[in-house]
Image (cartoon, rainbow, N blue to C red; front, side, top):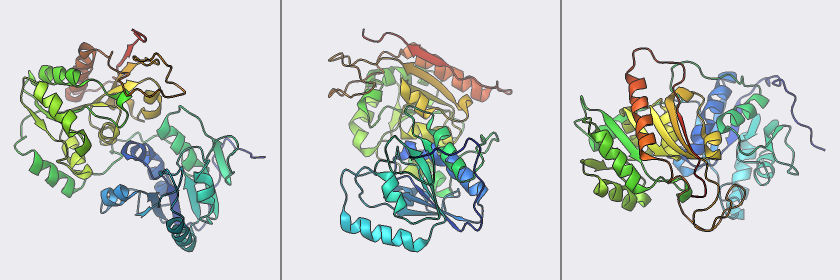
Length: 381
């Protein structure tokens, strides 16, 4: 029978040379792990911290100051970032991981049904992570909960290995910029000196989290009335959506879909006075960089994505649970309709949050927490 870890943080291991963290995730999920990664590096400053992630992690983190010293790319493993396992690649990867002789291996990828057995094969001195009911046990573990504040949940896992679970209360950003980030952003959007830049992010990998394009366009026009430069960002796959928002606007706007790498986007966000975004990776990048942000959230996603510094986020929330098409409840199961669950968030409300975020940024003395929560309670209409 599995036993959870004690309430107090376990003692740190002695002579720790290498730590591996299993987190082959998307952008937002990586940002959620940053506080835990920083805490681990602070606990074991002499140890090499290795992220078992994806190819994009290796590209993005190369030469970037921060807690991660090295990235190893996880091969296709069913339930661990891939729909099926490529056996030959996995066996070679596991052999390489065992040869590394890790002192600590941390599972930070879900409840452990597939990720715990995979992590255990690394042969580390100590394993730790989250465990859902009935999954293979690790040496130290906490119960997996959903929904939960992801940054705090991952900090709790780091605490199992002896890291201190203290909030980063200083002004240092969680994510470091590089000169390459700044140069790329300046090349894509030159001539911003003296101008207020506002970035709109209308896409998301989950269509249910997408505020409608007409709403983003109307908001962009209102914010541009004060002379701001408006840029609309998106991935290459979101090019049509980005151009749709720009075409609907009366004020001029810059379409950035596919024009920036992830690092270049960080460089641009660092120059922005405001980011208005759906719940998606760039929003969480902006929050990690300390950019004043308005996030449009669907219900439990706000619990998952709340930053450790709430003062940077002004959140608009839809509490709709039933599909506008078939009326099926989507809290525990997902219906087949790719329809927005946040369309009922009002433009006036998001504009008010945007102006509050801009005023908060320019205020000489900032209040402790100016996070506004605009909850929409018109579910089913």
